[in-house]
Amino acid sequence: MLKRISLLWKIVLLVTILIGLSLTLAKIIIDERFNTAVNEHYGDSAMIVAKLIANDPEIIAAFYKDQPHMYIQPIAENTRKTTGASYIIVTNLENIQYSHHTPSQIGTKIGFNMDEVIQDEASVMFQGVGYDGSATIAQTPIYDRNREIIGVATVGFYYDDLKAQINKFNSSILFYFLIIFSLGLFGAYLISKSVKNMIFGLEPEEISYLFKEKEAILESISDPLIAVNTKGQIVSINKTAREMIYFKEIKKGANLNLPYILETIDIIKSNSLFENNKKVIIDNHVFIMNSSPIYEEEELKGVVFIFHPFSELKQLINEVSKIKSFTDNMRAQNHEFQNKLNTIYGLFKLNKTEQALELISQEVEQRQEFTNFLMHSVKNPLIAACLLGKKNRASELKVSLIIDENSELNVFPDSLNEQDVMTIISNLIDNALEAAFNKNGDKGKVFVSFTDLGPDIIFDIEDNGKGISEKEEMMIFKEGYTTKTSSNNGIGLSIVKNTLAALNGQLFISKNSMGGASITVSIPKQSNKN
Image (cartoon, rainbow, N blue to C red; front, side):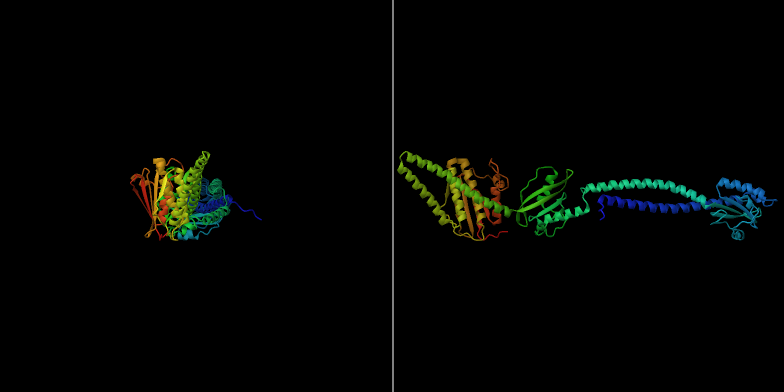
């Protein structure tokens, strides 16, 4: 089986063939033009020499002397040698030759037909066969002083002489053609090598496979993915992105006028740090946008954007929130029970049995009372468990968490996602507990009330913390903003905002009588989630 020719040698071979054909065609055209030019040149030269002989006074005078050839032959031969003509023949009207480059031919009749020149008194030029081969021949009449024709001057240039000139020209031009061909061959190799380097040394079959592989990978990604150039024009877009309403009418090469994409490109161009995991809205859906710049020799060529549905991330956050709520509850209970056990153990050690039993009775009664309240007032077990966990968290911080005994949440529509509601109240109560604790320590207080009366579910959360200023009110719901010094903060309220938006809910912030923040959350029972 024949070995497949590589792209490098295909390009070299193609360019070489093109150069060879171009040079060959040029050579043919030049040869034709040169041959025509040479023939015309020697034809004109032959005519000039013939007329020079025909107008020579000594030759005209010799026609009226005895033995004209004795006078004409030397002049003709001298002129022949001077002009480079192959032969010069002077004849009378009877076609008798008075001069010839072969002296033995003098006195004999010429082999050409002279009728046209003599009868028409015309100068003629033609290609014919002379004494020693093919030649370019010119003939012109010779007139005496009375303008009577007395003879004919014939001048010829043999083709052998012309071929010698042409061959000399061909040899020189062939030399230059070989130089050009060699340079072209070398240039073809360099160009081929450069093209090969530009495509990373890959063969067309490999490039085709990689392209198909890339397309398959793009189409297999379940998240929307878009690649754009530095002008914001779409270079590549996968199936998931094409199915989105916003991108349905957009084709490759179209400008993508999404502010956050153009802003990210500008940030990357300026070599500034760009933000990943950025929340954006497309088709009324929230996505987490990640970007990856494409560089070629340290020059930005484009950016790849991938959009993860926030709903999936939110689902994970909800799962983590449930786990966190459970662990917080366990930790708080463990911490509180450990303190109570130590106290009870101390009372028994001091033989204060009655006080120990009274403490145990109070603890059981309080917990049972709060648990019974939640069981009767909150029908949703996940929300009830969340409130119980926050009660334990408050006990751990030694902050009073007071839930209005008139609160009720007996109606929880199936259309509402219980995990979304839990995420909202969990984050808000956590913030309230920390705000109250940071300002007042064990004198911190948080009040929670809720109701399902009317078309909305209402939660009110108040604390005696430092409150929320108007400036902070503009910033607290932005991702990454936090007043806390520990890491991994600044996302809770951002999640609250996005979750409320998904539930078509509302949030109101005000200042309460204790000087702290009062937050009211309103969630429609019939929520039209996107």
